[in-house]
Length: 468
Image (cartoon, rainbow, N blue to C red):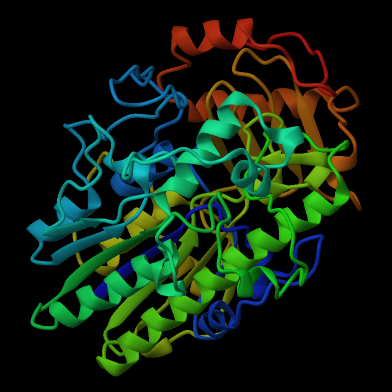
């Protein structure tokens, strides 16, 4: 059996039709929806660690990254991303390495800039890895700076900070020569993946990982996609300010949501191209396809634009996860069991007939999910820097690793995130924080505790005593 992992960066769960709609209205995803009808749909899937690189380290190894031991990286050629923002440890075998040893031909098609920076090694174990350059701040082009008029078109004046200006200038410089839809990133990634399938038809078994950085910002899409959601010409808004948006012009927020929705729909269209290629090549009967995201993105939710680990929220932490079996077997099944990225790793190895390494933290989930059982997890802990999040069936806890700055949300409430109920439920806070500490195997590293002590509590948190 062949196996494909299709990962979209920053794809919100509620922007995939089978899961519902975002607050600003339904997003058109006909190909994702068709895939869902043929698949097992997981409704409670979460990352293990965040953001971008920690999420992939957990996925590519099946091992916990949280609580970020030996992960205070300061690497040349990279910015200080977050604890865990570094390479895969040499002593940890990757999923691709294990499958290649088992006789699989392995391939990686990606435009995710951070995986290919100096000192990174996320291509380990792939017989072929193809990196499509130009996303974000990748220095793939040089040339003249934007004129002030060009800058004003792409970046609203009220958002023209030094960082945002440099970021947008680099992004636009990288994409100056795009003249048709196929020149954009999601089409390039999915076309290259389809080409890989054509060129590797002789493989007895293959494992293909496809990493599309879209619909991550900047939301640079052909105008026809944005016009599906906002048919109005004018200045653009394509990035996050990573701050409160309550004073942002509502028209700019609608523009942002339209561009993000357009980016999702473009990803959907070209995912359809990949699935059609599988059909034409007669691979749908012997290929298992996983479709999921690393995380989502806040786009005006609770007056925030960006993604963050504190306070954490479902539009970032809840992720879509669907599994299409060969021949669309088990189509129409849904499961509410808790799963994380490390469980995807373990499931792939199990389906490939590879013995699970003893050090693996993930657990295969397909048998339990198809049987309608709840699985072995009664909660998940997601690590992001100094602020773990614990999610159970009824509660959502987010705090710092020293136990302070607590948010507790009752998931049974009509609007769970409208209020922080930590002070009313101290015993629940204690119980959930104990789970966070238990999942932090080896305890919290001192450097992480020191950072937490220096960080300010988030507005609206409960200033509860440290529970170490």
